[in-house]
Length: 307
Image 1 (tube, rainbow, N blue to C red):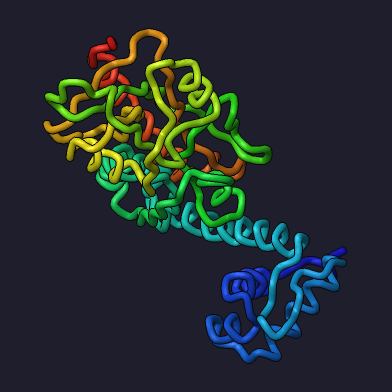
Image 2: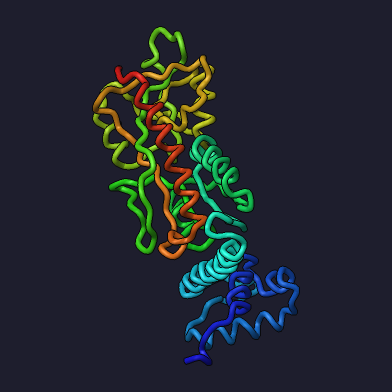
């Protein structure tokens, strides 16, 4: 029924409450009174037929229904923005006139070595696009979770049999990057060094490969990211097994040795929502990512594969 439809301002209010985790914080962010925010949320809950926030002295915590509602609210609000931007672009000269924000979530090595060239190509063709990049750890729900929750339009994610595209999203693999053995240059016996690792490094598929390698010890050192791994290897303190993107621009103090035909690989791809996948700006970024990924794949194919 029309009387139960939610208006955009109601969606903005529940998003603001979830962001601030309080009614007063949402009111301050939106320039409203706290009573106006409370009244709007109660009306939204009545229309939906579910409690969206638990109220307490600590603020407002979203219920499971609230988390789901806010995720949909973010996605609906983003579609309304996209509707306006694409309509303005069409009025100004057609589909090639793209304007407005484009929100991207990427894990660290993709944000450093895959995304910049793609965004440069996108901005060169469409200077009106305003990329907004968030670096997100590829753990748990990772970058795909940012897209599902409406916080990002597109996520660069690790995909594969053990980490498929989540239900409700669409995506595809951009590049299959090989892992390599990384050790200090000139070290007489690099396999004798401690193995260093970081949480985002591998999927369970790659961990299974590791477990079958008698020469690989258990990792005794763990760091926060691949940059710290390279620093430890470069300084002669450790060896590592790392994917190609993380080795882009590795210093000469590091030797990268291929692991042969049976090496593990990591699938890096993109995820987005079905509705945003049809928008011109997201499709334009995907084209740029594919072009950059194709160059990366060619570069990887030229590296020696031996151990």
